[in-house]
Every structure is written in C-alpha cells, then in structure tokens.
Image (spheres, helix red, strand yellow):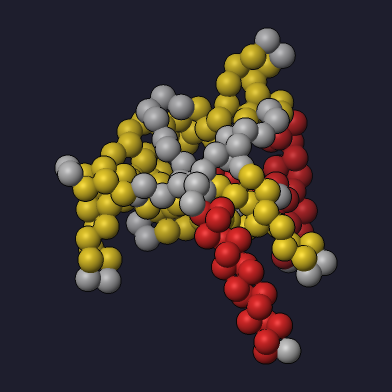
Length: 200
C-alpha cells in the first residue's frame, strides 16, 4: 500500500507540474458549491483597484486591494443590515499578486479587477475584508446583450482538478458559456434559502 500511494503521489506531482507550467491547479467548484461555501455573494461595481506591499511571516508580499460598491447582497452580512466588512456600502477584496514599483508578482487564476466593471462575486472572508472564492471561478462579469443582462466567466489561468469516484482528472480553464443573469440570480437565491433551511 505505501508503494502504491507513493506512486500516486509521484504521478499527481508530475501532472501538477505539467499543468502549472501555464496555469494554477484549483479544485473545481460547481455553482452549487460556490453558493454554499461563500461567506458573501454580492452584485457590485468596482470603484478602485491598486497594489501594495504587506508583511507576511517575515517577508514582503505584493497584494492587490479592490474596492467594490455593493449594489445588492444575495448572501452575507449585508442581508442582516450589520455591514461587517463594509465601508459606506463598499467591500474590499484582497488578492495575491500585483505590481508595486519594480516588484511584480503574478498568480495565474487570480481575478483581475478593473474600475467600472459590473460583477457578481462569490467571496470568502479574509483579513480586513474578502477574497474571491475559488479564484476566477467566483467572479462573473455582467454585460448587457440584446436578450438582456448576461453573466459570463473566463477561467483562464487555471486548470480544474476534478474528483469523481476516487478518480482524479484535470480540465483546462478558459471561457465558460454565458447565462442570463436573471436565471443565475434566481438559482443563487433558491440555493441560499435551501442551504439556510438545511443549516437550521
């Protein structure tokens, strides 16, 4: 048994190295899991985004802080009017990587936020605010199309680790099919209510 486990570890290590040459390997999070595990789900607009240095375990790391003005809460502290983690209706998202002077740090699969973007975000709590759950998996871009508002994701920069009946597989990231925003919001609201009932 130990030799078989060692062999599996070696195989997975080789697979991970081959995939991470161009992408970050992350566990796939279906929409149901994103809803269940998110500490907050919000629709909002990016107001500003910039990088800074933070001291972490004795070393300086570059992080990017993004402020989002919340338009609506689907899950999280804003629903209870106790705006923990917010400032005047804004939340702050901290992600690893960014640019600070001559210091550049890039983490493939980390969402890149641009002021003015309209987004639906699945977030988890982080020191001083939030971070995007599941990396780019938790960030939906909202756009206006002839059929109405749509939500779309680009999972570029990640390779999705899939587990099924003890088997492990990898799926490349990249653009995912767009969906009508109204349908997505309806699904999220229903799932939040179901999850709350199960938690009681």
